[in-house]
Image (cartoon, rainbow, N blue to C red; front, side):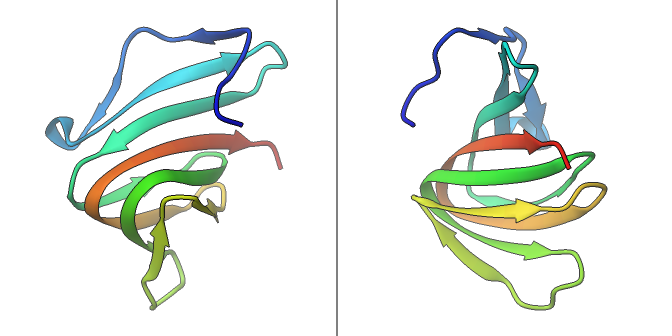
Length: 105
């Protein structure tokens, strides 16, 4: 889906890594939550509280999930999941536009 209908957007940005990664939280009437963001080139590590589905809308990245020794290439139009209470490392090679969905387990 290319747009969301009937949502609430939290005005305050989520700002990480000195502004190199930013996102906005989108709340849905069913109680679900997503964030829409942009990551500038660099290397970052994120922790998760909930299970997440990361959709890469545009860009070129590599990810390293906990317990893996191999970096995976992900580009615009692809996605990956991250378990709850986990973390992942990301190398952003070109500006990355993403949508993160927080999934109930």
